[in-house]
Length: 176
Ligand code: GDP
Ligand code: MG
Image (cartoon, rainbow, N blue to C red; front, top):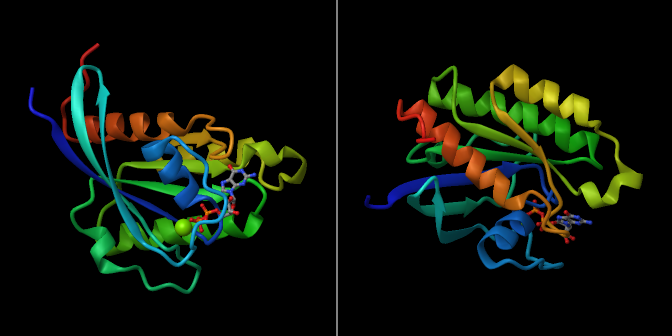
């Protein structure tokens, strides 16, 4: 089977680990000081259920509660990774606003989303509980994961789960 092209955007408040997760997934390393203003596009080939995917991953420079949703992010994307940090209640509030703007701009009731609570290695600084994250994702019919870009925990799962959600949306349930 020919590879499928999948365009994915990483969104969320500043400093939650969007770039760290992207670089961990694409390059397999944790970069500690990455320019927070850079918007970068990465590519990676990955295989799920014997299907190859050419992933184009757009690591956005981040949004806040006042950002006007950039229209270019509502076009040509198959799915979204919405990231907050488990150490930042603010980032959890902002992700809800980003999600609402996303649906609004797309004029849809559903888009394939994986909600990610990053920085699980900082558990002593946790301010957003696993239950809160899970509840929000259920409400969106999204997948939910807690990750650590630093410790490479569950990073690959983000993209695998999103690819599956996109397949399901397209009416092609993945083969067993
Ligand atoms: P972005 O602004 O969302 O792209 O966030 P960055 O990826 O630039 O990360 C912001 C800061 O958080 C940097 O200092 C990262 O090293 C740090 N960071 C990102 N992910 C993790 C993580 O999983 N654990 C810890 N401890 N720090 C992280
Ligand atoms: Mg960044």
